[in-house]
Length: 407
Image (cartoon, rainbow, N blue to C red; front, top):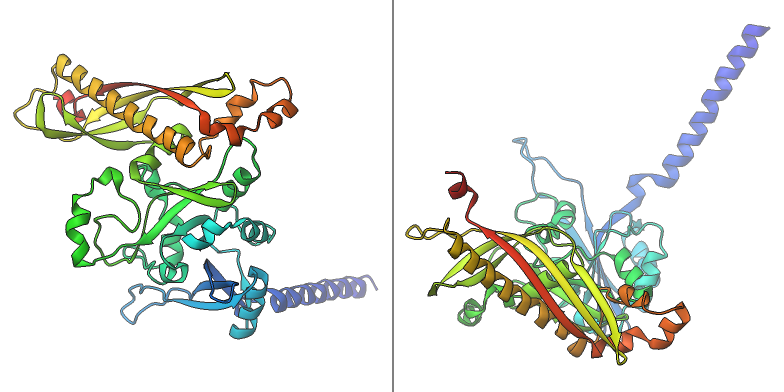
């Protein structure tokens, strides 16, 4: 009798497992899902939107055993909302769209200027969307941007989307602007959001002479001198006032933003040699600590002092120069200070006077100057930021290159 009960119990447990796993397979089978890796939003002539969905297949393997690039598919549908677009696309492809692997959401510039809050709220209300998905504002058609985002050093488009913003860690010419931070800043009373500025890497020969004359510091998407096989590029930032795009930041202005928000890890600047007018020096800069911000409200206007401390290393070396001389290094340090102060100051006044948008989050320092939250709300920081005055102080200690110092 005991043997029969034990055998019956084992059979019952096995049956329960089979039922449980068969239901899970039926509802979550990969064969029934279409994984979206990118979403593009363009305006349509009918007054609605054109939504583009990029799908990818798993990496294939050739007969020789080498890994081949996984093809991606871009399908578009016109609809009034993302929800309606997803339903229509589900019907078209015969599978259920899954957004859990969506890496990037691209808005065309005209949609961003109009306002994107309804799209942001809808996407973040979907539990499949990850807060780490990047937000890009494209200066060209969003669908066109997606179709031309072809990885040249990666086999998978998903891998490219995972790492395409990593250059912010060592150049500062773009930033990791994701949908989670965008929503937080959209809801914040002390700051405003930003997005990656995307565009096309044009190879129009007629424009090459004009583009090559632009300094790298003023480069931004759609206007850089880069040529290559990948059509899309990401340089600079799109600045928002609430949910509407109000302006653009170029490469060095983006670098200024990263330093103001303590996100910069390392970067290069190019300054004029203090002893040789026709010579320029590339300096490798590293922040020593977070910027020190001192904010006061004077006669109703914000007065903001920001102090930075950097270490610098000479990257470009002229063989006939003695870069270990203390006086020369001091002169180079002074030139670095002057250049960075001017760059940062111009950037700050651009955000306040031109954009009227506190993307730096200075409002959190202003909050402490009021007795109550209600007093701060009555002051209306977002309105008064345009009247702010700035003082930037930079202290850079420049050394010669590591190799020369150690010899």
